[in-house]
Image 1: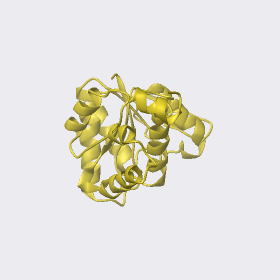
Image 2: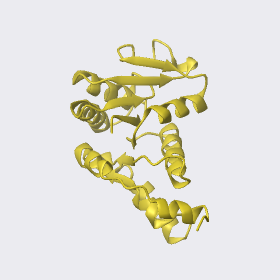
Image 3: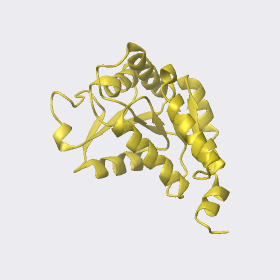
Image 4: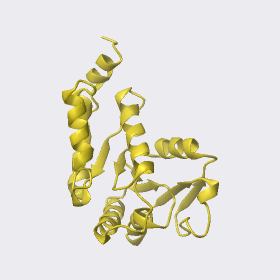
Length: 193
């Protein structure tokens, strides 16, 4: 993987552990020679993941929309800043640039990006790994909901297993690098066989 798209929250009103983990993730990506693709912000976890990558000499591409491309919100020190016309275009551009996706803790925007990425993998729109960094057990309730959906027959177990989740950035990246796309499950889900 040459580039990873990181989805994460932009709030500054969160526990310091979340910010530290974001900084560590960005730094680790840069140390592995992996370009960071993210939402272009300078606040919250978004700013920390970018600063972590930049502090280790990494390349960072931000993708932002015009209403967020302000001095208060946009990171000014990136390798490149792309301005997309709207949120749909922003997600499409991040998707296009990335070889894999990681969700750090965040809110509605992060979940939207994460679930769209998972759904696209489920339908075969991409064959890239998807992971979640489980800082402070943030994703435990979401993982339980996913497992419940598998038990109730709404999600194939192969698709659930294809979403990686670790509390350590290195372990998460190591798992994602071994990703094998569940082609048979995609065909079964689309009723192609």
